[in-house]
Length: 211
Length: 397
Image (cartoon, rainbow over all chains, first blue to last red; front, side, top):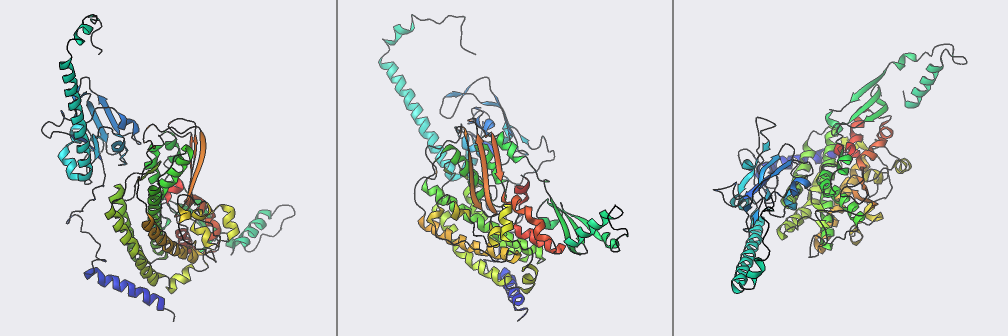
């Protein structure tokens, strides 16, 4: 019968219309600003820098200004300037730190390559998506003060990833401490043969430490 | 007035007054002024993006159609030649933004061919899972948009989007992004899905045929749809093969050419599935082709979930940074949801490709648009364009 296909189709529409009031499978609309969206753990948006200590964020940045992310970033939205001096990092080794670290979030395409290539677990993906600025240049260019977020924040966003990173860094720190202790013990055990070896080769004063 | 009449009239008119030509001005000259040239797009809602058609109309019939594209040109190939191999991966997401997973795979396939990189078994299965889920996303969206073009304002499209959103939620929980997945790497996949993810994906795939049945009840028998699509936009197989048309558009014309069978890339030879082939090559066949392919994709997905092996998802020898394939060339291609999607790379041993070329199925399938549209009305041209399935991000690159 001509028109039966149309009527069958309208039946489906009617079923969906009625279902949108009681059937959970058809009630898919989320009232977004009124009910907040639940983001999956893997969700990524813009990068942020991890700091160890929330009270001293600039002093405890994990970033050592190696500039790998700057080189790998496909749209080239990261800008880093190395520091002149060194500070101890998470494992206690003296390291450089970024004097300037800026990310232009207007250019960033949220690809996560910076996170993947970072050997120090210093840069991670944030989940803020309600971003707006009154100035499209300075307002979207985030400097290191705005980018730095404590490790606890990282734990809150990506708990699985953060636990894995903390375990790895903890093991590294322990290994470094043990190595230092072993070196100190070896030094204490054999101080005599080492002492004469140092004295005959004094460094010329003019050379000094390398800048 | 048909197309051939028009060219005859043109010849008569141009010969008028010349030696040997007609001495009396042709009487039907007045009809010549009836042709109307309409520029449709680039901001027209039914051209699926910034695509423009310059249509010459005789009344409502199309006499000539000139596709104009390039409004979304982003210099993709040149950017990729100045970026590292890895750095191009997130850009490939943005080619065909409905199917980033399969575009990623095509690029990874080309680079792996170039560098001789091995891929672990689990990653091969995961790639097939992602590619087939992408096919479900693309085809369900396409069918929804096709009905939008037919004038059924938004109801089928929103039902399709409801299903698509479930798959995109899966992509988001796995790769971190709904559409710009950036999931494949040279030598495997970026993250291993958890058992919960696989269970959720399995549940979705199990429920998908129910959605397809409902969808078909709603649409396939609809008399208005049959009247509008059957016999519209016919494409004969010889013409299609000649123009290099691939994908569902070619198969709708009756040519059973599917790279999953022909090339057998990845682990596809291990899977049992059929390639649907049409007969008439009209818009209706192209619609049915998508529905049937979705049913086959569900079969492939169920086999993949059943046989998914344990193991690493990344080859241990794979390098993320400092990737320098030796000098040479490679062409990696796969059966994308829209057709043969290929990446051609020439390496000179440096960290970035010397030449990078994309073979976009959308662009090449678009080349026969005029042949399909001639003689039909302008309202049909919109439907024919919808049935070809283009994404302007891929057409213009």
